[in-house]
Image (tube, rainbow, N blue to C red; front, side, top):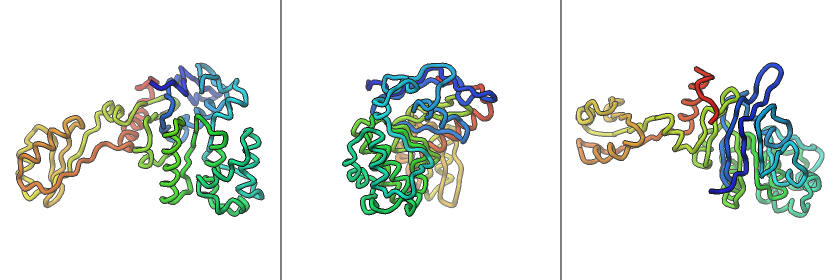
Length: 311
């Protein structure tokens, strides 16, 4: 078991009119990438501020890299990289000058700026002023400054905002490299399809509480979401009769049948369909996605905010 990089226990963050976080507890091992999900106002930004030591909790315990972030010194902060959703830089500085400035603030060798600009695809724009950068270029410059100091923990808030599809792929390539190097990554994004195959854990916040936490496979099992078969066949009615009342099946076209079954039974049904014949030409299995998982736990919390407590 990898050591824990983040430990949060019964944390509450209260303001005069509401509680942004209410009894949140979770642990993140070293070297994993965790998706932090939730609607606007769910408590994601508040949680990141607590982990960065920018604000203090009202109650509970927080340990990041073995220290209380609210009391930690500069050496601790050098081990953390942060990319906010809206990055703001000095417009009159060039990309190279911007990285040199942040390198000095973080006590990092300024000579690394060229390597980092190359890594995020900005080497050719290093000498241009930031005011001429597009939104996507600013995001990539923000990632470069977050990587200063070779952080052990990287926190990214909506990092692919403003990036086109090719640049998003390149961004996640860098993230995968960092994870392979042992960097722990906390990634907040509304683009769930991007996160599904790239994260080890997912945490869903709802109204300041954790409504779900675990691997995607664990959350699928907990939600009991079904697998859906799309069966192309020359004999749709024959396929439906063969299924009988054992599972939900319906005709969805001239030559297609939709079969809904528990995820753990998908291989059983696949074998049965292949053995049954009946003109089956193709079978597509659609497993519950992160979007489905989020919709399940999100709607559950909105319907009954007190139903689920933090684990």
